[in-house]
Length: 400
Image (cartoon, rainbow, N blue to C red):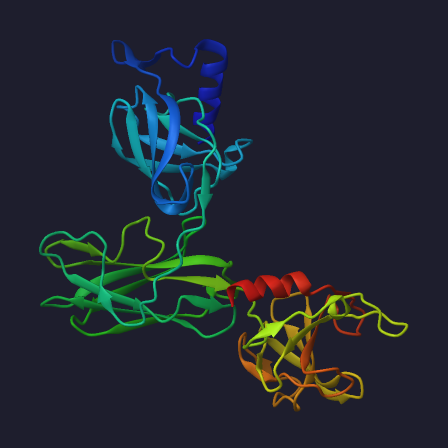
């Protein structure tokens, strides 16, 4: 992409106006290539306005000399080629080009390219929104992807639409309906950048039988995957070379799930109280070191982040409290005023989303609530310092 941007910039600024033709070297002379012109961009599917499109949707470019366009480039910030994303056109006519918006396409302007060296001036800006929420598909259902006539028929399903770091494993289930065992290839794709984080070659697998793959949240041994949308893709090819795929290359809804690093700890109705509940508010000559979140006594409480239990004790002010050293996190996570002592012992490992107790009012508490703290390295009252957890809690609350 760097070459495209450099050549186009040089040609447009130094040699030609947007309406001028371009000439490329060919055998025995020159080859005429008309320079595309984009006059407007309009969303045509998965839209939230004319120039607001959800990833996986489609847009059309309207202009002149577009019939030879092969590639549309989403330019992102426009400052460097680092965030550019290319998309192959769905159809191209003289005045209209239709293109599917890639899953990792950035917001910004777009340009249309007829060859490696002939591209249009950038269009007006278009906003690319996150893709629609994943479809719930716990039970197997017929796949919607491309299938050659006579190829195996595929059914797929995924156990959840939300997964959390070091939480419950995600299960992808599939069935290949055919008369003989069929080799299959499975990929797990990070939507934002299109990267394949894991792949599996299975087969030949027994036909007409449900098979399952489990993913624990790692992109490689010892390496955690990034947060974001993930999609499972299955392809199968029978002995005659006929191929079926579980979804289209740009699909971001079917067999998809969102992966998060934290889960909101209170699993019931709650509120954040008034200003006195906030981090830094006065507490009789001292400063409040956490955020209070109010909920009904007995409401289930879970670990916001997996980790190892450091303390499980009782204090006259904090009541029953638990401190967890976050796994692959710079923070200690502190939960106070539990209804009863947590069942977890120091040294034991807790998974994200695993129950650690219930909301209570033990210790010096006015009403049932969780007093929640986050401490930076090296940890809680061990040289670390507390941070304001309000914004993290609100983010986790929005997706949990």
